[in-house]
Amino acid sequence: MIGYLNINSLRNKIDQIRDLVSKAPIDILCVDETKLDSSFPDQQFKIEGYHFPPFRKDKNISSGGKIVFIRENLIVKRLKDFESSLIESICMELTVSNKKWFLLFAYRPPRYDRKLFFDEIIKCLSKGINKYDNISLIGDLNIDLLDPSKDIGNYLSDLSDTFNLTNIVKGTTCFKSSKGTLLDILLTNKPNSFQKTATFITGISDFHKLVTSFLRVSFKKLPPKEICYRKYKKFDDSKFRNDLDRQLLQGEIYKDCKDPYSKFTEILSQFLEKHAPLKRRKIRGNHKPFMTKGLSKAIMNRSKLKNIYNKWPSRENFLAFKKSRNYCNSLNRKTKRQYFKEASSDGIMNNKKFWDTIQ
Image 1 (cartoon, rainbow, N blue to C red):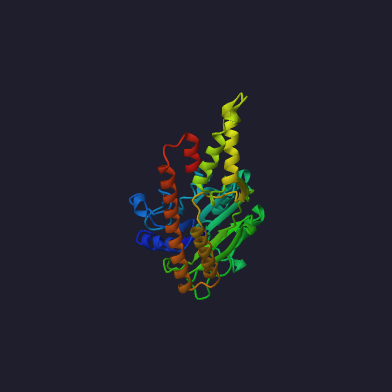
Image 2 (image 1 turned 90 degrees about the vertical axis):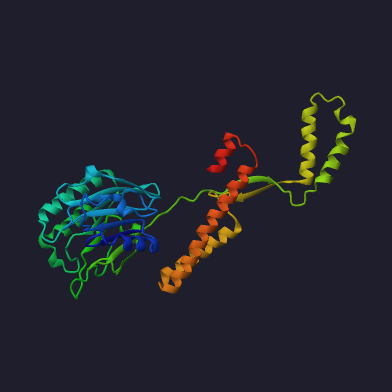
């Protein structure tokens, strides 16, 4: 999920941001008008589970400024060479599902020269489109898209036509006036790659809503794997030993035998097949050895409750999903810990077994 919020000063609201990202699955959060300078250390804005330090572009303590919080499991690179020194912008490369996205996070103050601003935006997007097939522009351009007459000079519409951009944010995002305006936008040349775009009143910003959208992610399904194993469910150790001893004590079996070892392994394999037959079955291509039936059921229940909450967003449904999510995370850690503990207690592992287990 990608989120955008014009916060109007971050210094005293970082705890509210931490609370927000702990409740909402926001992977990339772009925050505008932070009103910070170099006297505010990065450590002050550290969020657990997100890359540190965050991407920052400060202006001064009275106006402007940007910061981007990115979840740790995402591959995101800042592209400073793509950014403009004349406007407030942060450029990033996002890699997801083997696709690279060019993200431009920009803000235009109400009184900033439109021509100069859009000239710089065009330069940034031109650099991006030359290298990336997927591009998005996120930010507050202080142009009400609900009123076409507000696009004085048609700079925004011309920009959209030039780069084939579509705004996927609908409805009002700023409630400074009683009517409301659509100032906060998410423009992209791949609108079908986004879903569930929405706006929320968070109480963190003075006039602006939080804008969120989910980037569609698809993973190539791995083909199933076939594993081979012996069935020990009805294995009786004493019967196996007795049958093997009875056969091996017959001296005739080694008569005229040139390779006793091969003969022994042949007999051993025959009795193994009798008492513990070899079986084959297919498993998922991304099968995890620590996965248990209990963990699998917990994951399915968590997904079900998440879908319920997404369809009927109420506090009761959120608490039910949160409880299931926390239980699932706890059980996941527990099963992993138990699996690696048992694997390591079997004895000293060779390099191959060690990496097969860890991976």
